[in-house]
Image (cartoon, rainbow, N blue to C red; front, side):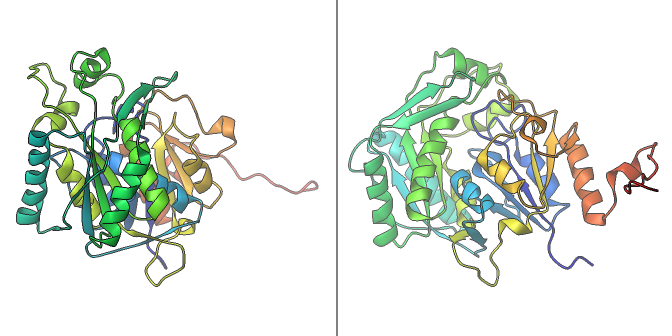
Length: 352
């Protein structure tokens, strides 16, 4: 029997056009499968968020991207919880009808799922979200009033006793954009993802508390040619339910060792797209004994392979093959032993 739990981290970076995990919750099947072959799976909202859809996994930890980076560096540990009290922070720019739809979604998860929510806060100024596209083709963005965002979060923490924060910002509608049309048809990059990451990063960095974001948008006109990968975003009025479910059991972020806290040195395997290995999170994990599993089939807009960075990786074609690599590692089986040809041992001494 293993002396400690087998722990894996699954990363599919947001806003880089990942073929799997770059759409509305299409990374969930990957997470569900990997969770079956490890004791603990750590991943981030981009993988588990599916708008109205979600799939709670008892051994899976929902960790926002900035917090995941600090975890990888060894600065923060992850302390499991039974339930978080979630604070709701709304952008003042959200129109009355759209706000009511989000409040109804929040009431629905309280009534049907039993989640614990505080009273909500509306920011004291519009957040003024602006979307951009990087030269690489990745999406990103900014907010014009970050101080208003942080003041609202602080009020939820101090007055509402929030232990996690769900942020809903009004994003600009652009139903005629080419980027949006491509995304709805299963191509290109999620135009909202980069800005969403900026918003949640600000709150997590400032308050060291779990946080995630759901964009507020006007419903789009019906498109009979909609890609199945984009469909989850079009079946309701809000993207909020999955965020609330994820945050309800998101681990708390701690700086000191505790009896149940998880630390980066305990991570056995890191699974990432093979072309997206350049983030500080990935490089931090690779300084430990973590095995990097690079999935070639999950193409992205990035062109950062592990080898030019001096990072040793197990390259696999698909996530199914990645699961096989995890099973072998757990069993203590050398992957080379499963191949038809096995090289003979070589002598390392100079004078055999």
